[in-house]
Length: 336
Image (cartoon, rainbow, N blue to C red; front, side, top):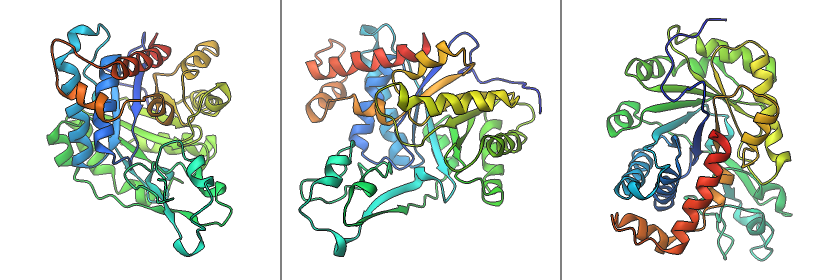
């Protein structure tokens, strides 16, 4: 194992960072802008978005919305924008697809199972809201929904020029040849001063396999400390301790293998993740929270509009203020 050298400013020994995960295929850009503003005002350190110009633009616009009124919020930050790229078999690059001829178009089970509002009243799947959690698949009694790979071919140079400063590679099942094809682009990102993270999930590989892959990918950066995202159960964040335990257990198992890079849990993370990590004295660098963090935010059109006015006099509506308060409590559960 290599010894760590240079460490990104987000990796602090006395404070965990909070990462809002919006998803590698999350394309509801108005909601992304609103989420970015709310969590920037709440003290978020990093916002993880799809590797598309539209997603980066939306996140940065939300951060700018927040900066205009940041003096009213003592915990406000200017988060780093992270873009996520994925291996072809990674669950984060999938979307639900309806098989038309099998669907009854009358039973509500798929819609009831979706926590993201990605299935409308007519039982159509809304691609801009689907995050690939696959909860609708087992809920459908007609086997009318399947998960399909969504390819992305991002220009990392363009995303850097737009203002993204962190890059995450989701590894799927760990195909070395496919992952190594990203090596030069990822090294260039770090050379320019960006943070690099690799996401390993406990569903597609064992702890030993994950640790071996982490060591391999970390070897791309002999002088820099990177982040290992320990994804206990991808896209599964719900309330309660049981949801977060796989992420904490996977993080501790990876730390136990002697990895010298920073380890950050995700996948099932919620407001209990920081609490459980403290109880277990898990030496994590931060926490990434996606589904849970997005679902506790209630604001839609009117609340979004209020934030986007960037009014220094702070004329936010009650919904926006409540969202910021909920987000603040969640952030504090991680970095206290």
